[in-house]
Image (cartoon, rainbow, N blue to C red; front, side):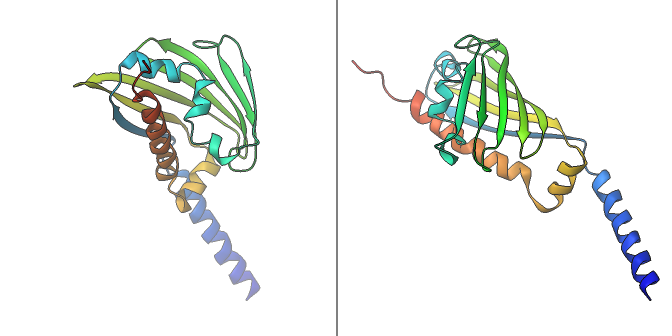
Amino acid sequence: MIAKILIGLAVLLAGLAVVISMRPDDFRVSRSATMQATPQAIFEQVNDLRKGQDWSPWVKLDPTCKYTFEGPPAGVGSSVQWSGNNDVGEGKQTIVESRPGERVGMKLEFIRPFAGTNDVEFSFKPEGTGTLVTWTMSGKNNFMSKAVGLVMDCDKMCGDFFVQGLASLKSIVEVAPKA
């Protein structure tokens, strides 16, 4: 009887491993918002990681998180390291591409709760009287990420944070200049 249970359990685990391994190797999360501001004005907020403290949705999750900024104040080579609670974890974000008014590319390295490296991109495209801002994160799914994806909708979870961040960014860049 125990042998049958163990065989059944082994078959179940093997089947689960096959299902997990067949999930996509790559992921991409992307959200967009139109803002009534110039591409350059929005670029300046994103290209300076210190300014990101004003609109990043993760900053609100851990007010005691420790941030360390390195490199130039903005643009390529500028980086921020953080270490916080379980909601924000620990990692480093570095600007690797900076095209004024068009695009900011970043390398995002997570240390905890899960190690991983992803690419982040903000693009700015004129649209009517405003700018379409698109925030995208892409990367590779390891076995653990694929397994977590069976029970959690990572696109929705990350996407919801992107929507919050874009709304906060919009509230900053759409503020009328002071006389």
